Image (cartoon, rainbow, N blue to C red; front, side):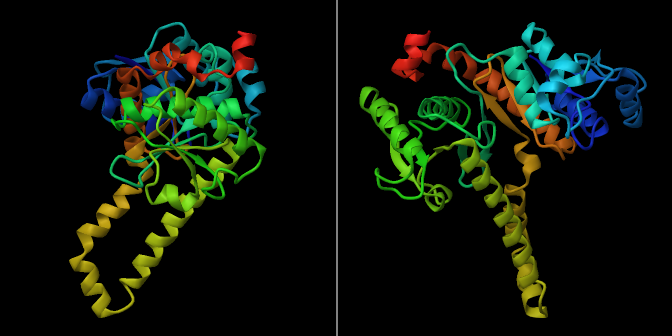
Length: 345
């Protein structure tokens, strides 16, 4: 398997990206193509003690970089020689099995859509992170790629999330919930009401489509569903709220257990347990987020990724390729269309 990695994307590029890629190549046994400035990549390898290219590592020269604050459409259009565009073009042309980038989310989404293209029939690609809220995790889709959605987008998100949960997270008949302000079927605005009807119909036509109804944020956090379907605006707010709450609680717990001699002694006894909780919410352990709906696998690593995060993002790419998510979406596309979309195709 060959994974394309944007060596210049992210706050810690290229050093962290190159190191993570080498780690992944050695530990996972995959071939890596690093796209970026050759001299910069070689300099990073030299810092690691490599005087020549490690086995299974290639470099594809890309002299320019898309910065985080650039307009996504203009950057993709104007910077054909950037590390991100070169990588996406190689992915489109079949020179790799998947791509990983810690660069601009907007640019990666735009580039993946315009260069690699969506699966035919899929209206919008979606970001689908796995929140570590249970042993298997909660898949949230979408969390920011599409601030404005239609009911059909959310229907397709539900199917794509289901396939990912089944094939990558290994959840049998994953419970699919619709993010809403209440559990009653009459709750929400027009988007939620129409989406509920589509998801309910899908469940009636296919018993394996396990739609459990509306799910409130607190219900999603406590395990009422395995796949949480959201419009990108609401999903992004929920995801960032969860991240903020996790950081706040860990900080508060640390304060409680360092406030006195007795509490410090208790903390010492519970040190391994707290370390496990902290590791569970460590973004580096998850690594990356799948961009579902694109015709070839694309993984978005967070912008501040260190080497471990890049390594684990590459692992996510390997899992996504091996699970055949894209092929599953393609083979089930007719179930994911409304009557209007079917007529248009």
